[in-house]
Image (tube, rainbow, N blue to C red):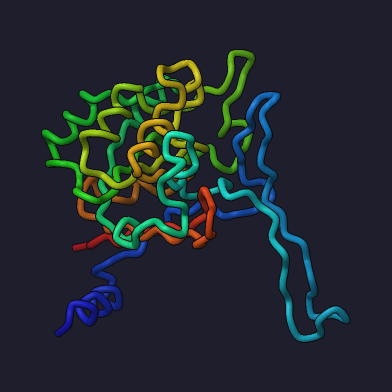
Length: 258
């Protein structure tokens, strides 16, 4: 039996589960809001063209209006100044978009501190228990933040002091960018950086360092609690927008079940 036939057999027998990690895309999908004077993206919108009516009697279709970085989406390296000469979203290698994934879970610590920042020692502790990060694969950072994703106010979690969402310490972002073998880093929050990442050095270290190293970001994931710490295969399907800095994406994982 060929490898692909074995895969189909395992899917049919429910020995491999397909887990959807994507947030539904609608007009209420939370989007990042930058302070003035910076420009912001638009919310997702559907514009009806026809719906089985005089505009088109037997078909229904829409125009879509959205930003590249809306909902569950990919950050290509060229999204940030440090990666401006890197790949656009249409150039991301397919071997990066279909690759092994591991899950590092700090949801218990984020529950006590929404400003929690992942440290190098947290990753080292995970590796001591589960093995090395996957070469050419993805590190998925589970914080439990996806439970807030249906409520934009709770998801963005902004007060007078700024946004409070978990992220990664600058030193850890540098280590993931320069020393780890991963090709991408995925999160449940609105962006790969912490809400207060502007205060770090460098500011927005995941964008500055990980994208600057030619690696990719992946945001607003759901259902990471349904994945094992190791052993999942991630499939990321962005639109191949030529020159684009990112794209909304359908993201799912293949998980072997006993």
